[in-house]
Amino acid sequence: MTRVFITGTAGFIGYHLAELLLSEGFSVHGFDGFTDYYDITLKRRRETNLLQHEHYASTEAMLEDDDALSRAIDTFEPDMIVHLAAQAGVRYSLENPRAYVDANLIGTFNVMEAARRHAVKHLLMASTSSVYGANTEMPFTETDKADTPLTIYAATKKATEAMGHAYAHLHDIPTTMFRFFTVYGPWGRPDMAPIKFALRIAKGEPIDIYNHGEMWRDFTYVTDLVRGIRLLMDAVPERPADGIVPEGDSLSPVAPFRVVNIGNSDKVKLLDFIEALEGELGHPAIRNYMEMQPGDVPATWADATLLQRLTGYRPETDFREGVARFVAWFRDYYGH
Image (spheres, helix red, strand yellow):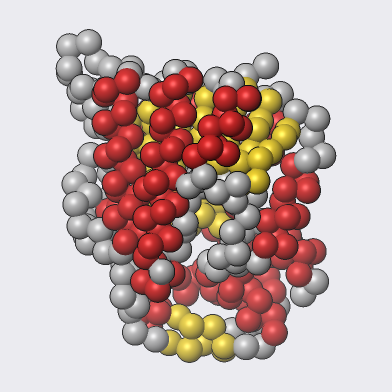
């Protein structure tokens, strides 16, 4: 039985990945700090669901607590580590940047040290499409430069990519970094637009729409995303013996290290996403159009060619279908 240690299992993506791996017969140990960045009740509900599985156990502690993290990993002895825990949120990074340094840099360093000690077969870590920053040529590809982050959140995630590459090179740790795009679906984060919008639409309250609605996002349904992670677990990068990297591959010429986009490969206008929500909820939104916010970008759009080349898989859930599934869960959970 393959043993996978996942950080952030009480979080949105970590929860769905743990559910998928447990359904496939993996043994999973979760690690989560249950921070109060958003409603902790939702995190507890996710954790309660996971604890129903025979082959799931977890540790509650912060990533910055190296002793707690080391004890959990040393005891579990994982074959692979999937590092998803982080301080997330673009706008919150403007208010509390230190939280991002602590969780995303120090916490990730602690995870990499544990991976080094245990010589894991594969270390997989979450990055973000936000690292593309001020890039304007789309769709974004993994080989594009990502040197213009617009927030401390994006900067810390780009830094973890650089740290991961250094550890892969120095210690020969096979490492894959994912760049996620706009993820949505059941059990989602209430600080993100889908739940914020759905709650306000259901209550007849106005929703804030930035850049007057001239926004496009590559909305990626969460089960598609975690399926991509699951398949990439088996696509273990190898250091190229001759230093030659195939065209279009983000594999490092000097390390078993690769960066992979996981996105739906389709940019959707925000207003179209809102209209889909309105249709499923049966209520029109009261729209409060606003200026672009600091650190935000007007569009994101993934090129998922490399993901498909490595795994034979590409996320494909149409946003209208995904919204319908999301709203069904939303009505059940929130009672609207």
